[in-house]
Image (cartoon, rainbow, N blue to C red):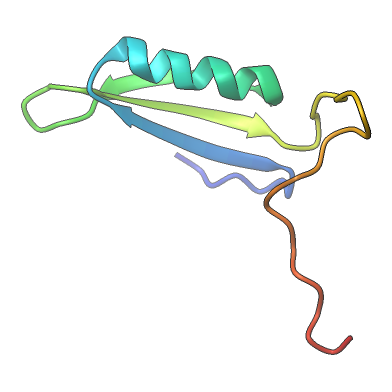
Length: 81
């Protein structure tokens, strides 16, 4: 798979013991970010577990009451000032 080149896109990989758990996590991400169709694969060598891939668009975030979205992942200020 080609790497995501747009600065506002993030590739997300979810690994879970069951497909339902992976889907639940993906649903939460989709509630916050626009995303691509998810793709799922067996996670373990024995075909146990689920690995789910999706791409989220971090430029499109929901408006929240009381001031909007505050990203918890932020670029730290430069050391020079």
